Image (cartoon, rainbow, N blue to C red):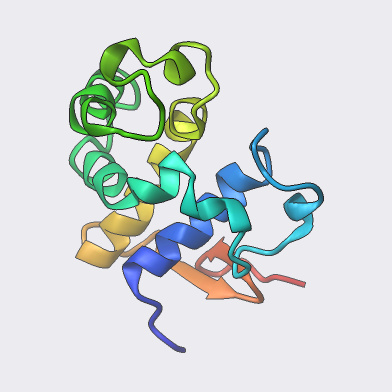
Length: 142
């Protein structure tokens, strides 16, 4: 089986978990598989900050909410230039229009799981990529 680079695997997880539900996705792109790059990814705050988001997920695995939102604001939002209103007062974040603020908590667990698997912390819940989807080890995709 081919070893997929970690960042590409994280992108696929985001496409499966967030892109299919995102209000900013292009029309009918929810039908695309996780291997298909969406045209909106270049402007998406999740993809633009995926490495920082992965670090937060890896460092905070276990505590799902409290420090994660604070760390997102401190490490990502304060330096974000996706909108004219920046930082903790970002209009898009407050109004839940920013894809990162909307989907971040849904992404933390799957990102943390992949990063734990890749770092060798949790070998019993190993993930495999099969037929364009991410599946827990041992689950067959029909």
